Image (cartoon, rainbow, N blue to C red; front, side, top):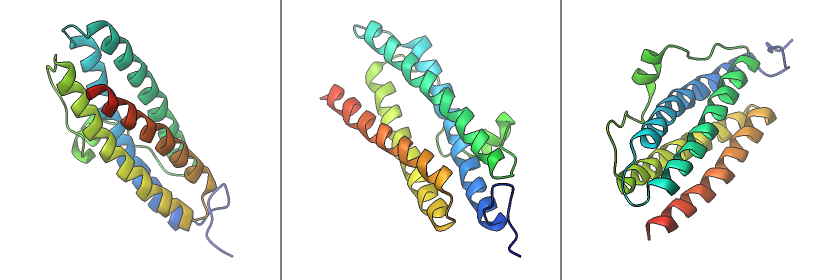
Length: 157
């Protein structure tokens, strides 16, 4: 009999997907913290609109952090949960003392490129593993974030 986890997926394939999800989780944690900092520290003529937008984005990122961690658990693995693990694993780096809206939006756009790349890779790995739950989650994130990239890019023009 095939080595499967609690939800009937191949254990080795699920562990590979969970490892990719943990990498995504680390990146989301740094993305979330950066968004909080942008929200708290933004200044300038566009303060009111950016302050609200950054709050919307960090609330969304926080939901995604939880969803990703719970998906790792669903795949019978353990989510990363120490901040040092996040710092070590994340391609997104900490952005400190950003008060300028243009710099903040550029950082968000660069972070979204990283997240989208990782989500597309997970989509492929999960698809090969017949892991429809992870595929659906990543598909939803990708559609939402592609629209966000378009909107933030249009805001900069």
